[in-house]
Length: 278
Length: 291
View (cartoon, rainbow over the protein chains, first blue to last red):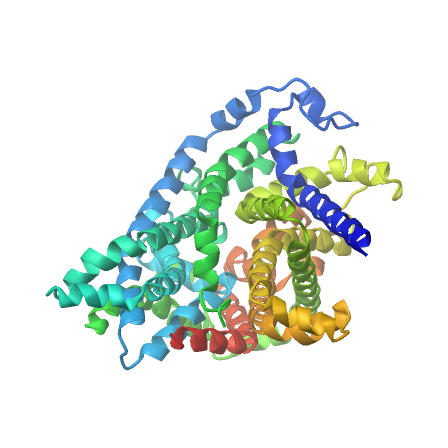
């Protein structure tokens, strides 16, 4: 009995490790390809590890036209979007979490409903409206567009984090004679700081990865985002330089992976706050 | 006080979303092409845009294809997600940590990056997938072109989508599984229930709400999917015979600069998705209300 259980556990562990290898393989293959010399990349019999590792592909990727310009565009778009969105979302999240007011349910429906809209369906009207106000092919048009998607989930996540703070802490501050905004700043803000960081990171990743709106709203190569830059890489030459492509892919994925891994637990909590409890 | 707090959000969202949605409805009843875009003024067209879509066989074929595609993707995502979650509950602590880290890594991969990696791995000349399948004696896959048929193209897109969506589904479901009280499972086992019955009668009812939310979300995402099929199949290989709804909309509305017709397609899509998502929205609102 005991032995059969041990065998079974070992079998489950083996399945788990096999699954890990299959799931992670594409990421592994991207990174190792980026470090392989061309001869190993095009070999009919692939090498599982780079036998003669080289960093030349990274240099090639970075010297592609517009790489740095487009990375800079991405950084500007992401920082401005996240900064403005977090301030606005924090206000709304406090309202939702701490006050009962008429229209609260309606506001909730709005916050959740917006996230359900298929983005493809909004390309046409956003393009037409932004073109009308000369916001096509400028970064500000994309920033405005991203805010509509970042705000709803930021409000949702932040109000979850605020609700998870015990009321007594806030009341203790009130008893000490602070006004409500004062209590908020002194007591609440430090407590939700981790949640705020997690939400900002999630917003950062969403904007950094976004493809379709950036592609439609920015048509000048010098005005594109890093993600769109990568999507055009395949079309730039007849014989795809897979080494440079994978190096570029790795460069664009790295900031996302680092940030995401750092705050993943908080993000998972924020996205499903309530769902898991219920 | 609360109104002042939500006002800035309402103004922003109203301006950036409310107004475009109003324009979307308006555009769908207008003839609006490149000329009208420059003039900032559309020509009234009544419901002719809707008529032209509903009489377009490509629309109906695309809709059918997208429904089948969505059903396949959602079933695979939720099915595999549940299996991975159950596996996570069974493996040892070290393997769980390893597997969770792997899932998080996959979760973090940007879609456009993942597309490029998929493209490289499935390349018919020296893609590693062909090599592995041949080495495993699953057939001769040397120089096999995965982009040759519509079925194969969409199957590749499906593997990409399921791979990318698996982490979120599996990790969320695993979090739900940890809420299942251990003594309940034990009591059921002592009463002689097999592991399938324990799953069906004890575990499943507890994780059902999460399962339903994840299913609704996946349906909504997969029905409107654009980036993966658009970039992986590639513009040169896209034709009316392999469109999904998101691509049909992009090609007909944006690329052909027939914005009025594109707006009508968008509205038809929005209506279909909103019917699908009523359940999800109601559920989430309930959660938000129950503080």
